[in-house]
Image 1 (cartoon, one colour):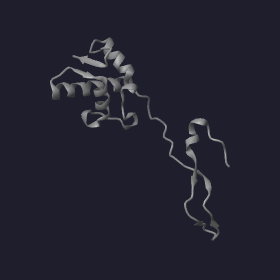
Image 2 (spheres, helix red, strand yellow):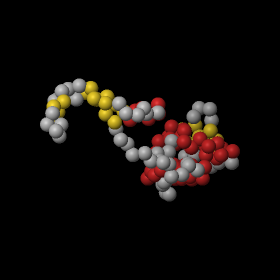
Image 3 (cartoon, one colour):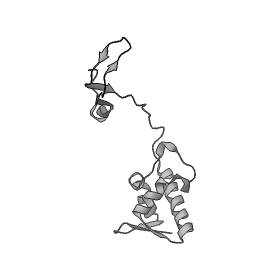
Image 4 (cartoon, helix red, strand yellow):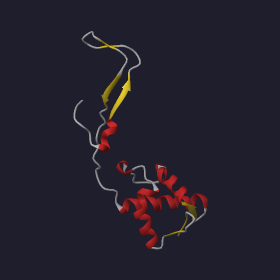
Length: 129
């Protein structure tokens, strides 16, 4: 059956049901049955770690766009999450780090809150300068 995959990579090996009889290159036939298939996916090492600067720039650009387009300085964390995924709202995109989400930029949100640029309320609302 081949080598055992680590638990995190076990999704790469799947059993598949063949729906019809197949003929191999040597001319023999294979009847419908479960066959273990190894799925090869290219592994990509992250080029760099997601930096605090990248996170903060992304948040600031999205918030500035929101302020200009709506005239408001208040939004929900859900709105911020959706806007972070919208690449057209930002410059200097690094595909290695995308898509961004609230969970990925928590360190930047904490830093911006510490600096007084944003204020997050308990109701999931965010106010910014």
